[in-house]
Length: 144
Image (cartoon, rainbow, N blue to C red; front, side, top):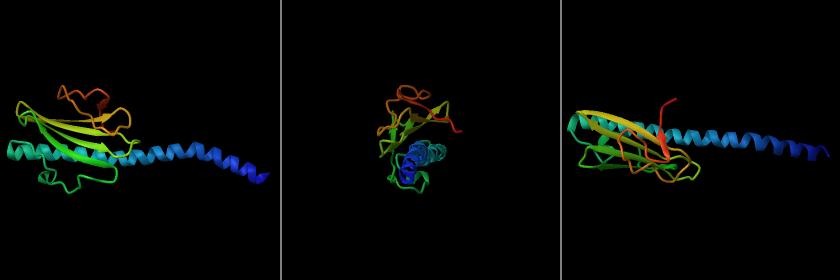
């Protein structure tokens, strides 16, 4: 009987603790993407300052990380005659959120923003209609 009660208690504790643990693990994985996108955005700003254009190559930004990690795929696309560039972190796990960073030129000044999907997603935010507004289904990421 004690064994049965112990099993029941273990099950209850697991049901309470496990989701919290998994949520923390996912947040740690998402932090990788946030940091990589922030680094790519800063790299684009520096690159633009030197060359008056954006780059579609991660290594050209002086960053030393792979475009593929266990949890994310990273990509850069120059858009609209080079007036802005979008960097993406696309989740490989359906429990993780995806991210996009945008850097654009406004009055010879580069400005940046990071958008985070509102829910876990295997698609990074796309279809920016405005430089300063995240696409539908995503929100501006603000560091804690």
